[in-house]
Length: 256
Image (cartoon, rainbow, N blue to C red):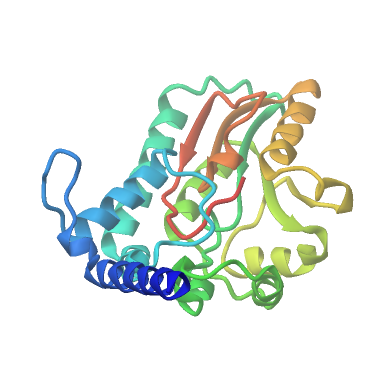
C-alpha cells in the first residue's frame, strides 16, 4: 500500500510538472516589474546584454532567439550598427591620434567577424543555436570563401593610407595560415604588416591572454597601439590596453 501511494504521488508530481512546462511560453512572461514582454523584446534584450558584456560565456544562442539572431545578422540594422562603430573609429583616428610616423604606430584587427564574415557558416548551423563544432568551422575556413565586411575594409584602407602598421591577431590556429592569407587577399585586405595566429604553445592559453601577450610584446618593443577593432571582448580586454578599442556587434558566439 505504501509503495503504491508513493508511486501515485510521483506520477501526480510528474504530470503536474509536465503540464506546467507545457504551459510555459516566453510570450506569457513578464518582467519583475510586471511588464508583459514579447518574444522580440526578450531576444533584443538578450542580444543587447551580450553586447554590453552582461551575458558572458554562453555556448549557444537561446533556442527561442535563433530566428531573431539570424534575421539580425543578415539585416540592414546589423550593417548600420557595424558602420557606426567604423565611423567612430575614423573620427578617433582623425581627431585624437597624434601619429609620430616613426614606424612605431600600430593598429590591431581581429579577423573573424571583424574583417571576414562567418555568417555564411553559421547560417548553416542555426545561427549559433548549436554548440560549436571546431572541426567543421575550420574545414569551412580552410576553403577561404569568407566574404569581407565592407565597412571594416573601409577602416582598414583608411588606416593603411595614414601609414600605421596593421597587425592582424586572430584566434585561428596556425595550420589555417595559408587559407587565411589567401582569403584576406582575395577580398581586398592587403598591405598589413603581420598576421599572428595561435601556435601549439598558445592553445593552452585563453584567447584573451593570447591577444594581451601580443600587445605586451608590441609595447615592450616600443610600438604604440592606437586602436583595436574586434567583435569579441577577448580581443580588446586585458593588459596592456590599446589607447582606444572599438567593438563590432556579434551575438552568434562568445570567445573567452
